[in-house]
Length: 275
Image (cartoon, rainbow, N blue to C red):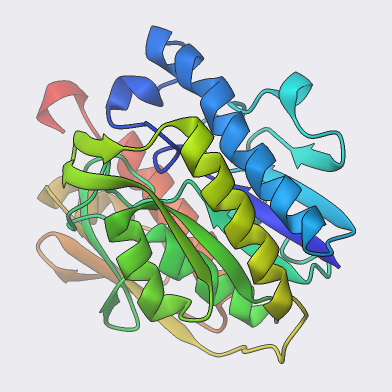
């Protein structure tokens, strides 16, 4: 049983503020070992539950945040940017389950550091008409490869979101959202046990299932008109409304590749304080 961990940072234990996750800041340095601790707790639980191999895909920002020198030696880490499947690189390698660790609520929703791909600028992402967090998008990609979501960790809003897109997954709320930049947090010693216990229990549902390949539509709503117009120059992308674009794809893999291009173009069109 080989398991993939997609590790994001906004939903890690104790994280509540932008400075906690922006590479190079004092607080980012502080939270790197805590983030790594969450991953190690998950790795330990997966192995206790019967996993024979674990690949950790660094999924946050620069994708170079976890401390390799502190990683559980039984795991391997995929680090660095420009992966074809981004946060879910490794899902295509015949793994038997995936953990969405350190995840967060989607753009336009309540949740600690809630966003979808772009930290701001995007006010909503919709997958087949349903509001979509990164968790929902990535779970759909996992389903296309026949890989079940085993565990989701993050704040309580993240876990509530996961009940819809991954109802059989174990869920661990490492903090309780008060606002986008405030939360009631449990200490790492407490969340580590919770994550490990959930990961061990989740191995009971590990194992490949039937692949679910189907066409999908993604729509993205921005906070400014010029971002939508910038993204709409991409072939196959249409301007749906003043601040909203949409596109269709034959599979979730193709949809996510197109979504990456949309966010890259829109992100590049942001102009300093004016967005």
